[in-house]
Length: 519
Image (cartoon, rainbow, N blue to C red):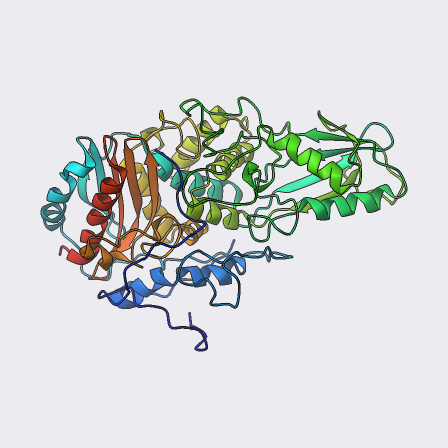
């Protein structure tokens, strides 16, 4: 993809030319405490340097795919924008293309013996604790290069979101959008706002997620449809999602005061946050009842601040748009739609957003006709993984975010899922790579792979999802070796004592795979 020469040159991610990442405020930092793609260029990965550059500039490719969506990191400000993205008025339909060209057999293949020799001392690091599960896979050859407890499920933390992203893309497709609707209530002057499961819905133009659907624009549609009829009551229909609003295995303070996740409801703004802000460290304060809070905000925007706001189901009726001032119960008064699903998943992976992950898991359930609850979503995800030819029986899920301490996923399932997405046989799944953080570049890896200095060899080359819970540190993703081979890997440590040391130890393993070639 040619770059505009008027912009700064993209830093080279190979040979140590890129400087170490330095700490900087970013929306993508992990805060947890504990359709028709273009054909890939054949033989692309035979050029290791070109392949590495793809991973470094993939955020620019994503711009072409889903519209201008700024990622945290070195590209901020290149487009004359501010550090805080301004939501777009519209979001174009995506034309998903693989971020990684389909992995082929070109490039010198590593050997299992060489990989074992390189990784054994690192996997045995005391920083990773006594329980470490690892799998490394040559994507093109489908050859396991390293395996330790690889088929045994262990606590995945946020690497669970890899499975959530892939199953959501497989179930709904990259271009799917979530609708928030308003219909007329049973009596004149009454309106019902119906949550469609869009966690990115914004109150106004100052939302957290660029291009998000907006409540104020929905209110404008409703006021036009109601004409001179005063609005006296706003009902909030959040009945799309079923079951408990928090999952088994979540800590009691995950919602409040920790702010790691919101109560999972079908209507919310800014993923349940009280303010449209994602903090780099710590959590983001959430509404105790996101749906009701959104309903009250909506009532104010309708100019009906004194209107009664209650929860309840919408009346059955026509979905045809209402003529101004003439409505019948259940008639649609307005509708706004989210950005494409691929863009929502991008945010989920970059920011490790737990609330988005849970709502995306419910989309997998809804697409299959299962109950959109924690249990229904978990079962639907495992079923979808199995339909994709993956070992779904190596997952025991209680949520879609990985926040539950009871979740279990094997490294084998993670690397096979990544390999399927990177292999080119199901190009709709490769949209996931738009969102996976890049080492030393974006998201939850933006400040990683900085120290010790050998880890810097992986900057711009490793693209992976991080996971952090108390005593648990995980890393799963893809990388390109110095010989131009695409590898999928998962490293999962479930008995760590110091998160900082554990993260550096995980980074050493991935960096070693990049640097050694191991052929």
